[in-house]
Image (cartoon, rainbow, N blue to C red; front, side, top):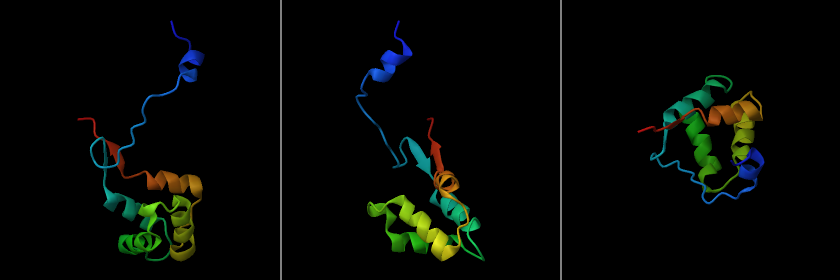
Length: 96
């Protein structure tokens, strides 16, 4: 029988991180709406998209940069932990 310590000590052989809609489906409209709803004033999903394009977060920019810009430019009023939860709200495992 393998103990918990032995399992933790073994290296993993692969890490699968899929955001291409194969294992994990994502609905970006849900993300944009959630972020906009957390921003000040009459922020719209389109304004969030515009900021994200300006930030170019998909090219390797740290996601914390987007959080900072949402807070500074669109009045996003939540801290880091809440932002991470918001950022992940549009992911769903495709069980099929």
